[in-house]
Length: 223
Image 1 (tube, rainbow, N blue to C red):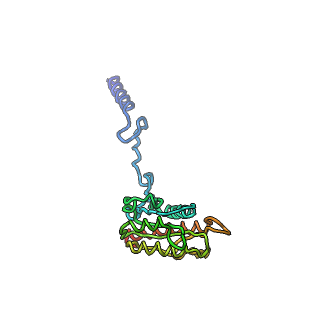
Image 2: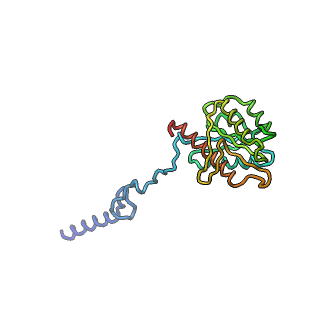
Image 3: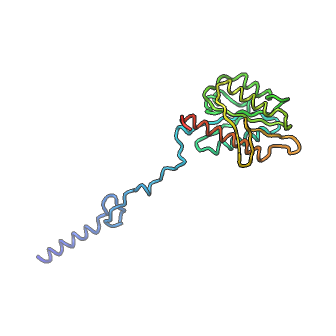
């Protein structure tokens, strides 16, 4: 009888020892319960997560013969890219399609000054395109001379945007360094300091950043 009881107990122990841990535990990990996933171990939602209201597309359209206006356009692009949720499309004026215009939430135009006014390719683009109502816009220009018409080009571009139903933004200020582009961004590219300076490029970045930010605010319906 004792041997029978002993054999029965031995059989039970062997069965228990060979049985895997219960569901949810690691095989061979004993009978300790598995730790349920917790909120601290789960991937946290990033503060940089972009909502649908913050996803905006900014189209930069420019004409450039010497490369100076193109450099300013890349500065505007870099400024847009500073804003979380904003995407940017950079195109020469002769490459822009109707689909590009339709997809844009904001449009920034750039042109050099030719005899104090907008370059012909940009003017033709404005003449043949239609209404852009509801979008946000801004403008920038370049010119060789200090008073060669850069501001009048920006004003002309902004006026065209307004006539097309676009909400234009400004000013572009950096009070800390007392740099300002009150109507838009601009660069003097002639002597004695030829090309686009670092401060002028930063002015372009601030324009892109501001257009993207205002576009998001209007899309959200709140500042």
